[in-house]
Length: 128
Image 1 (spheres, rainbow, N blue to C red):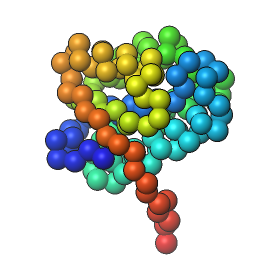
Image 2: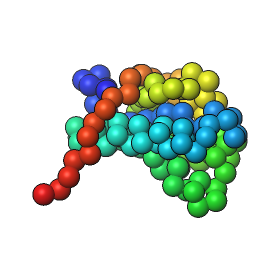
Image 3: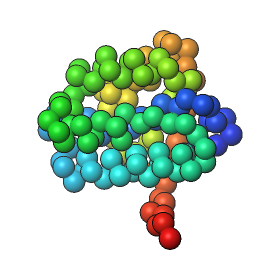
Image 4: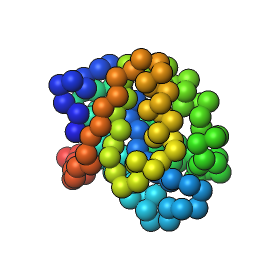
């Protein structure tokens, strides 16, 4: 979980969802999505303004948009330019992810700070 050094106003939070088309099962994609949601929610609770393309895009893929990096590349690049830094969630498969690799490459080329964090478990908070 990013702390201290990762307290920027605009934080891009990336994680692997699907390495290559068809490689990750629906169950695995949903597990990765939930891990990204947990981490993103915790950052928001800490007062960090964060954008996670996995959290944003997963539901849209469910509405029929493609999941491949080639589709999301231009869209992601526009948002990435607005962020101050990038944090990669080190969930299973992140090192092989084309999307994560390209987001880090683009962030570096844009002079953005890049950091990494391990997944962590949080329990869903209930309102009450």
